[in-house]
Length: 240
Image (cartoon, rainbow, N blue to C red; front, top):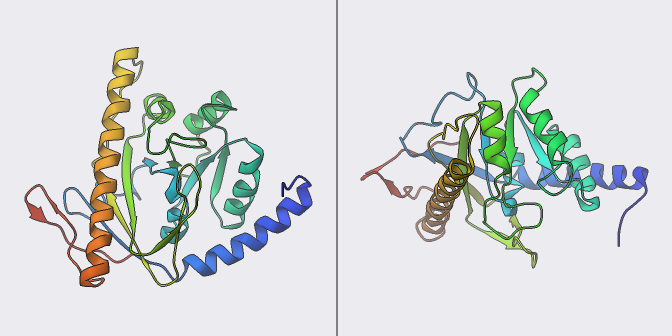
């Protein structure tokens, strides 16, 4: 059933936000990155564009970063946007399909609150895990580095949707693998745009494989299982 009345959408979003916050509040979080530090660069000192797949859209709720999320202007996106606002997250409406220019300008200008940007570069319609160029444009015009983040779950329910949307089961563990920040220069030509699009997609795919491998180890070895080796060494766990 499609929800269309604004008050109904707002009420459903508020109820959904309460359920999601309680549900995700049971989820444990573990993270690591390529160089072994908790974050490639101090997120309190610099802003980033975090890239993660659409199927892991619930992950920021467990981590609770100070970030604004890009949500599509499709009718289905309104409920998600309202829920994100109830959860205390900033929202920018738009996508590469609708409202892209307006959303791009809002991201570039920012609002002075120091919030990071969070983008699902294969959304809102897919194909799954195929990166669209919009995130490269945002990074190029804003000057913010892109940090690809792979997400894995020890136990999750998967929807029969185009992205196989993941809902972590209660008391499961969410693991995140952060790639090195990617600096994107301004005034890209077409060849450069394609280069950085391929680079970000490659790093995001690699981080996702590592995160899913780490989650699989936790299922068999327990939640203290060591993360995958990166660069010939094992990096340390960090509880969030």
